Length: 241
Ligand SMILES: [Zn+2]
Image (cartoon, rainbow, N blue to C red; front, side, top):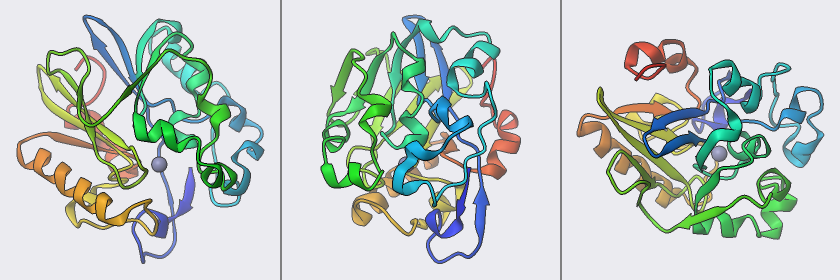
């Protein structure tokens, strides 16, 4: 997608073009997906974005929504067991329809925000993206997904009411999927907020929380960082890890 850089890093000029990633984690108890990217309909028609349509330029190639992307990487979307949603914005929850059998894992206050009529009217949430009858686990605060410390939801509110990041313990080390708490590396390094957060103080506190994760040795994966995406496998995130 492309949008204003100010929307990522307040006060900066110009636009930024960036990836919209999803992450697969293979765990002995099941296949886990973190986020779902964009709704497949956006390949040809962006009207479902409503008031946001003019703010985001979407470049989603045919057959590149989450279902075909997973199949192309050798995973069956129907076999995803848990779907962790960092939050419910259209570029994170938009592909939920293509992951039909998973139990959705979401912060309770994020799910509650889906019922906020003003946020829906503004296009910030679209219940049609995600309120699809999935089995759902609403969590409050940090949550150890399988009780073994390998996959932990870290509550990092501020971007949205119930945003969560995901810490993954692998044999190769610790990875933290920041989600939109940190769009890009500079969000974390410089504690540089975007031009809008649902709660700026909370957002800053959450960035500081993730800085502690980084200090403890975690590899940080930013939500939409085009520079990091170009080199991400060299950082130890990628197939086989
Ligand atoms: Zn977001």
